Image (cartoon, rainbow, N blue to C red; front, side, top):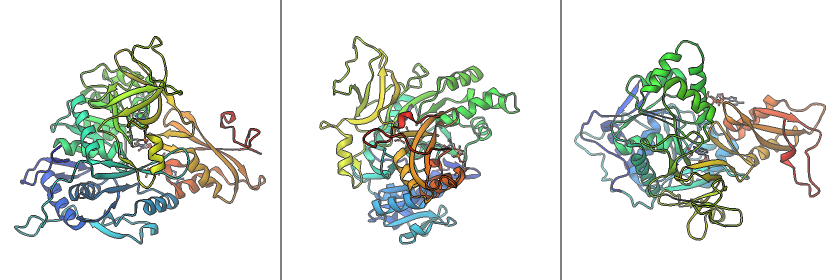
Length: 491
Ligand code: MCA
Ligand code: AMP
């Protein structure tokens, strides 16, 4: 594996990151991260206040170089979820930008301000030698939602990050010459590992847009950007902007047409959006399929055939099989080419387990090391995978974020105006799925407003987990055993 990241502290002016007007060279990143790594050495784990800024990049790189596992925190996380993550991951400190205002939940932690401009003492080297930690050592703990209960911390070893990024290098001919453009959050695998560590492993550069806009995508792709990473919601918005006769559509089409690679992931990109983008730009978006626990599993290759509705073939080093409910492994030449099974994967790209949750880790893995993704798929004759659904109906993918119905129900039940609550996902053209809350009010004469409930969930959990629609009922439909029958809840 050699070193996980490309580090050049030789005065090289090569650009590593750009956030708005702020650019950081590899030399600057090496110096700032060396200084910070010296301070972190020996710490158990550190939390990173993962704003879309160069401070987050320096913090994560410093932790990786020091061999200290980093826990990226969504800066919009609400009180209840943040308290859970801190209690579960027990970070020794939180790394943040000097100007960041941290919530009281983090008061008990030592705060370390990240200084992007930090310099070593004259003639010094930062005072630390930074040997490469072992490949199996944990690099990141990334929190991810399940169907019930609070999010679990997936422990990602350095080996998995290196293997997954190198498999993408192979699939996409990804080099140090590439300039990646994206606007993804930096507290999940997509934005942080693929979107930041990906370029930094190759010695290439990343331009982060701060917040997604079709104008910013057009600007960066027409001024040097070679690749775009995004979730389907972003590609949907690009498709809309291309469709319109609004000013900017032609420039956007030209910018997208000029990119080397347009990549979508985190949820399914609807064929309709694929086709609209292809019609307007002559370019096809390619999809890759991954998961926090497994990093990347499949992808369409840069020189492969983009086939809308599929997520490509297994990446280098990834074993993939489809397994039926009764445990039968579907054979590739099965008489029924449309046979559906659960995707199970095995390979160096896998996590090592959930933090403090041996029960959940054991449930997720088979005895011989296959990870049960919960995604249902078929496989084309040439190995291309088509995801057709998900085993658990209580998992919702909205805007590319995975959200558990159970965690939202618990938060809603904490509201004094709510007596009963059930949460479902409904199709949404922009978000893929939208969160719908079905609520029985404590006082039917004065139910809490939809806005009040959305604000409550946003403040307790996270804004992206807030219900977009609230429907009021006199009672939830239950079966004879008292279990809520979610299938009969639809608008
Ligand atoms: C609105 N806002 C609120 C409230 N209502 N804040 C507090 N309380 C409220 N009641 C704020 C939001 O925080 C946000 O703030 C703004 O209003 C707009 O919110 P929203 O409409 O939800 O956002 P959006 O603009 O529609 O977001 C769409 C998006 C986003 C940009 C596509 O969903 C996104 O970034 N998705 C990426 C998810 C992702 O990276 N998933 C990867 C995980 P503000 O405007 O200030 O932000 S999956 C993964 O990693 C695996 C491995 C994989 O395969 O990739
Ligand atoms: P997360 O647990 O947030 O990392 O999300 C992982 C899940 O996102 C997977 O289990 C899939 O359900 C979904 N996913 C990721 N990429 C794709 C894709 N290209 N097409 C369909 N679903 C995807």
